[in-house]
Amino acid sequence: MPKPPQAPFACGMLVSSMNPITIFTDPEQVAEMKASDIQVLMNYIYANPSMKNGGETWTPICIPGISENFILHIYIRYFTVNFGIVIVCTDHNSFYDCKEQAEEIFQAILDKDKEKERTETKSVQHTIIKGASIPRANLQDSS
Image 1 (cartoon, helix red, strand yellow):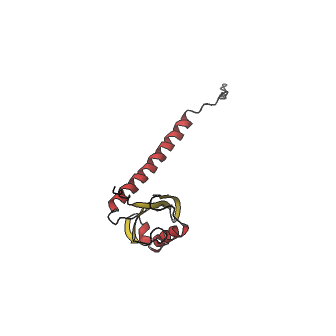
Image 2 (cartoon, rainbow, N blue to C red):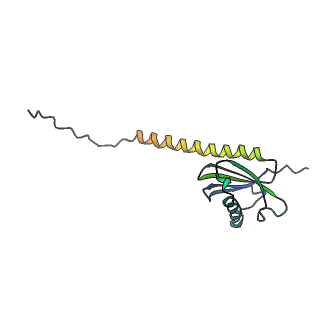
Image 3 (tube, rainbow, N blue to C red):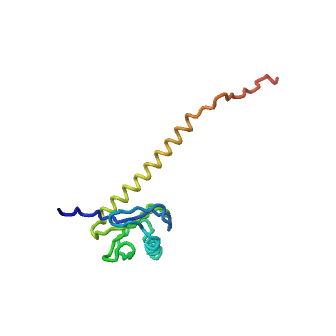
């Protein structure tokens, strides 16, 4: 029986400025991202400041801790100055797949943030303080 094709996404991370926020991997391709792998990626981005200017970058890279057998490709996109996504791929033709995934992840984060704001606003609007009384002003005629 033929083996099903692997997903092109090996691993990646959400980053804040130059710090990883969260790391995700495809366990069939990468058991874990080692600190040295993360350091290679972050140093590569740091050495190329144009990668953080709000555009998209698609570039080949060798990350020995992930794959010594072939060149990987990384998709880098900073949505804001301090928030971006890095996706490591095994397929050099996956640029548009990475772009789509990055946009979906970013949109999911925005949607979750909006939902949190709505929930917090709703809970503030419906807060009732039991036993509270409003002091009445003394409206005596001063004439």
